[in-house]
Length: 132
Image (cartoon, rainbow, N blue to C red; front, side, top):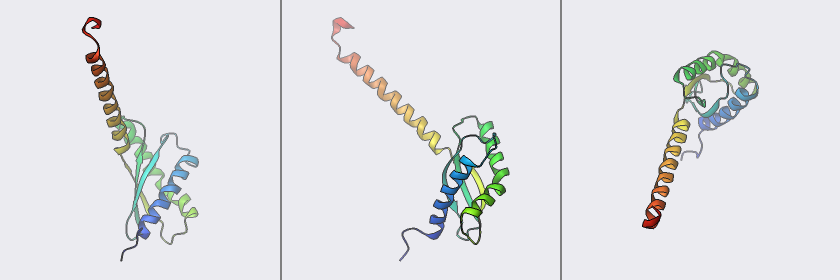
């Protein structure tokens, strides 16, 4: 019988929390700016971790620059986290952009816009002929 939460998933969740704290409080690189850690996937042997991040910036060139800055700082971030987490092997960090949050916000805005237009159209249709 499999456990409800695997060890790699638990380590991924703890790594996500620690990464969020380190990137928010101890990362002083102005190129990175505000970054959100959405998820962390850890390999079964704990040697690699894919860190999915979001920047609230839609310019693809700036996103690329921010990812490069994060990847350049990955060894430093890894060292900071290794001091906080008691692991025999600290995974190598690979940062990847996750556009799902930005896409979700865009879709939500589109739905809100359509609902508003439908309400306006319905209100205009319900008015008597002499008011139109």
